[in-house]
Image (tube, rainbow, N blue to C red; front, side):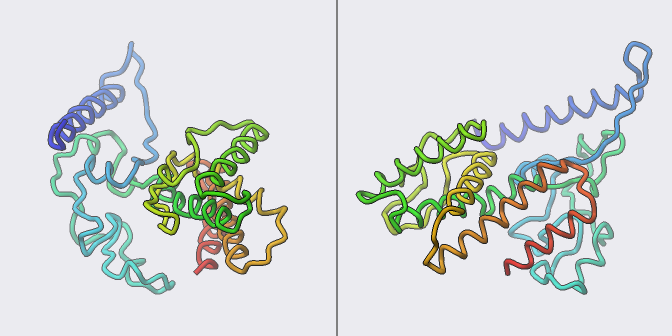
Length: 258
């Protein structure tokens, strides 16, 4: 299936979705008018850009569709982009013929990336896989070939999952699944999904609690994993409606890692 074919199918699905939910509001269902509260259009950044025909992205000067983020790398409180949020000078859309924006209540300002998948694909799975590899190199899973140590690590991980009543889609830990070409290569994948990343990070935090850490790099890993888990737990506990106070805590936790 070609990329253009996938995009065509996506557009057709969006058109059907938009027409259906517009009919719910405008034409009633069995004589009952259904009012929908449109909270947000959320998803992975790749598909959001396709679905909403966004012109912003990694190869554009504007990285965000909500603001003129030419100085997106500036995190200070007086950064210029903060004053342009929801007040763009130009539309971020390549076209205004976007089916999803016809859904009553949905507008550009309600397009959000999914923070769980953003963390997972951004650096969460790298952190999880790198943490396992570091512990394996330091022989916390015994001696032998790296893949042998990773097999033992996976056994401990599965035992942890069973103890907390969770299941994982990760088939195992290995250099191949971590996308490593050698023992010294940097792992770039975990071989699982966003939920698996949260499970591995939770297991790493639990595993390292019982260690007498003598290595500074391990102390750094433990702290970073704790911050990542705090992020996940906060999202899971509050869902879509995250209180302003909680958002401030998340931002503060992120800034303290710099």
